[in-house]
Length: 354
Image: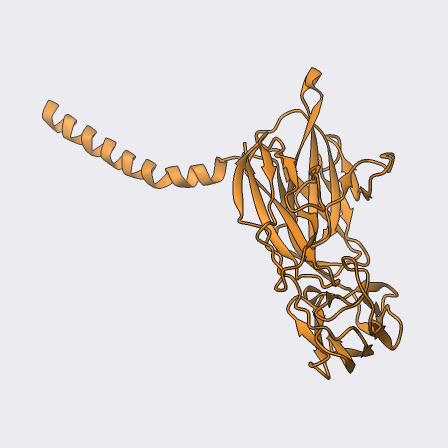
């Protein structure tokens, strides 16, 4: 009887072990908390409508001492501006705060937030939480998601916000880093569209649904990303198409015909660093085909704003902020040669770990 009972007990233990092994991963999936401050609503890639309200929700994860959360809207490639509750910082460009939320909101540290009326295409929702450290003051942590915003109404008209026709350059002009038009120059056209809801929205970039065509590619050629390049003197017509509508702009190019190739920006390799370390970005690999000196322009286009020093030098730097979990900061570099030709933008990601 003892042997029979022992065999029954072993079978029961084996069956129980198998059941537990099957359920354990599911239990982990159901009960594991998000370990860092995270936006849980809206989800990344969500399809949203400009001007409509949405519910924003965050998971605090293991971060304690959060006092409030500030929310900001940016276009996918917009420069990250200084984050503050108001514009009291003298000499700073302050990002407009879309919402400030606290523990008493419903949901806590979230709430109802309006999508900007004039937004279109990929938009970044940035949430910056202020964390108390007692007598040590406060620190900030962040999360952000990219969503896709569509206008609520049909496009009715397209307008190039330039002189018409557009005159580029004067023969014989000279330049000191980008102040005039020149052969090889790369540029964007400021374009807005009027929609049936009475709102004008910027549609310069392909991310907004725009495509370009040049009637004379020997004068103006179209580059990826909605950029145009001067490649010769003469006349051309630029046709922009968005949501089935078209707009045209006549362009007359009359620049110094000295051959010039635009410089090439290189923002260096993506990297991972530790919080608290000094990070030096490098654009030293950037080059000009004619070997001319370069003018550098750095900006931050992803992540909570960091104090980036020497933004007009080849190697700017910043101090990697405290983070609760790995967070990515993206920086953009454009370089300009002595004749005024700009490069296409180059990007570098810096991932900061705790």
